[in-house]
Length: 409
Image (tube, rainbow, N blue to C red; front, side, top):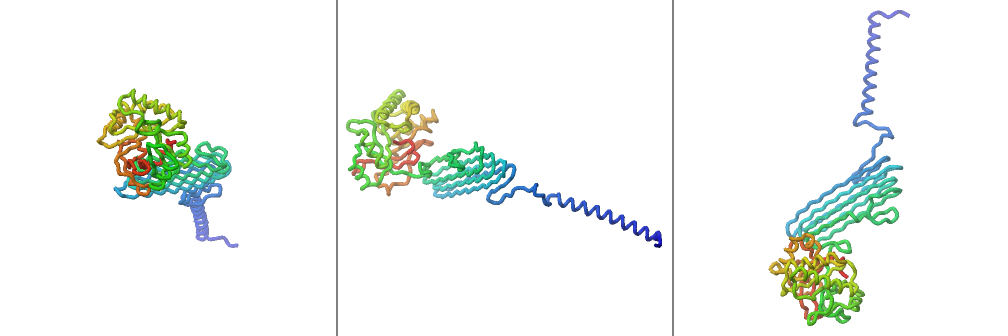
């Protein structure tokens, strides 16, 4: 074999050198692309997938957070519809932990509103689950508001689920405890879970089967019936045990009224009247938590001291404080409650008000007026006696918030 010439030898060496250098750069480039921002990962490094419906999966720990705040301000006669649908599907794998947090805040100001909040959390295959659902509805609606909160927590293979609040049915947890509904005006949430107005009556006479039929035939089917504690000569007959049983057998709740006085002034007088009302309610068998309404008629003298005395004793008892009267802004009763509330915010917050202002006249249930009671600002309005002295059946007609059902007998 002939030896290579110097020129050819130089060419061969240069070619080998270039080949080595080129191979080095190619290897480095391939390694960079495999490990860079857009590169692939090995199966051990795979990340959980998150799609548009807030679904997550992780072998070690899964955390899901949803925060939604809806602020809506409507002009008068406006209608507000708010709908929040949140679904979290979490698969943590064996031995993993899951944490889900949902925070929904709805602020609505208008005439009418429909608010619907739906949250569903599905947690699979984890040892420790933490679920935090918070729904706050701050609603200032003057006519009608419907609020629906539906929260479902489904946690399977869950050994430690301390942060789920609510009743337990197998692995399903219904979470109601963190739902808050603050309705400054309009209808408030009642036993049915949605806001509504309830039609009812009150009467100074004993309720009989004939009277019930009279009301149903001429006016409607009341769900609430206002009756007095004790007889007052020439004014009213007191509620009896037989009458109570008759009303309850017809699915009618009883609103208790105290009218055994004609003077609504003085702190000690207010305390004494409250104590007398409490004793009579006990004797009749009225259960704990029922409200008793002091009947302060328009011709009664009244001051804030009486209201403070009534509230103090009633609030410390097993019953709830309430006041009935014509809460027209020109009436002394309006000013007295307003002053008492300025001196004690808790009094205004916790005293149920049943107002007879404005007076619109007797109607049937179907023809009841739009809800428009008058009372001091921020008062806890439980109901509105809009019609007085029906010519038939000797009743007055009312509209009540459904939340008052909680303090009726």
